[in-house]
Image (cartoon, rainbow, N blue to C red):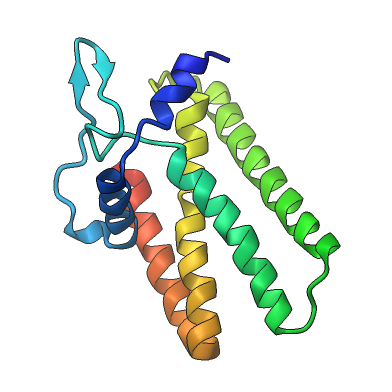
Length: 163
């Protein structure tokens, strides 16, 4: 694993993160989905809002785990073991998801420019919607939860094929 390749996916700034979060939650308003290149190499996420990054999925993953712990604490069901179980389960599912995508690309003999890091980034963007859904459920009850679930699911369904 190249450190320089990994640095590329974390080359973000605050403006990029805010724009990307807006695109993740409101992808219907975004028009230009093309990733920009400079001399056959993609621009860094800081320079191109359409470039995949690992900063948002990593921070969203951590935030989701902490928010799940807070939700369990509000329900008086929190314990450190449950927090660890939630984190390890979420991590195992993202690994399984990426392995299934890699296997599918291999079996279907699809030649793509997507790297494993790209697949991790795209599969990790779902945690943004999950955070929104859990927060809505905590603030507005089950009705808010289901409305947020429908919204974030539709936004993710629109975002992923467009990217």
